[in-house]
Length: 214
Image (tube, rainbow, N blue to C red; front, side):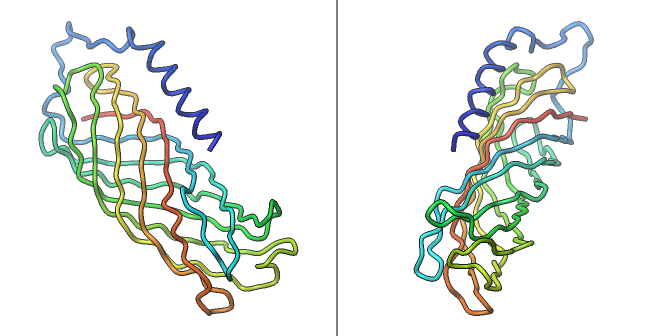
């Protein structure tokens, strides 16, 4: 969790230190209101909140980071529908401190979002709720742990995702974003084709990004 704490502290520091610079351009006559499409590119760190028991052994799944991209259709100045996805995230699996396996996860989601305050407000918090799936690939074993030498597979996870975040408007088109996403769902873990546990990781993702409305 230390990497997520570091990123969260960086978000808070940047927001506090640059708030005066995020003032609207009132001389151009442009406005964020009425813009129907939003694209955001960013980077997120993820950390599981639960660790699975595999073959009667408690494992320790480590988080990682990945680039993210989202596209939203803004129904009006407050409601939007967001399609979001991340690049592959590498995870190490440890037992008693030793690496025993690794895998990649790649989540994607669709959510409804509500944005508070006026479209041209400097700070605009938002919340979202939706559905996500995450594909697991490149499962492999390592070392001499409980999974070493076994054929491990993790099925696609499906479930709910909740989002809280804030946009810091730079001008009517460009803005910076910080958000936190919580994913809840589970899937089967199989060893040599036989179910041996559940991948109920329920990860948290903390991200920052830069977006544009048009």
